[in-house]
Image (cartoon, rainbow, N blue to C red):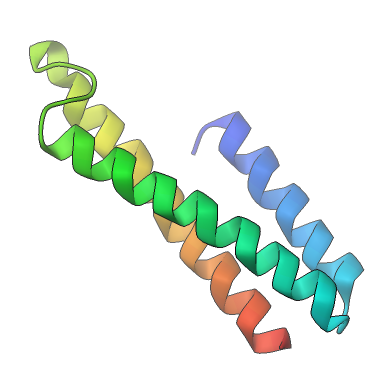
Amino acid sequence: MDGALLMEVMETREAIEDAGTHEGELRQLLAENDVKEAACVAALGAALDGEEGGSEGGGGLQTARRAAVKLTYLARIRTEIQDRL
């Protein structure tokens, strides 16, 4: 996992902790996560279709891998938020 993704995950988890059981805050975090998940799915699809990163040097495959890893973390975050709701 790259440093930027690690920071994003840590900051989001901290925001979830700070929200506690406040439904409005949790729903806002869930909505933000949904947007990130949709963008990640789109990036993954584009990479797999060869539209991102090109075919030289496995750039598209690397982009797809990064998107898949990020999507995994975003799915876990979604579950954490839903469990609190």
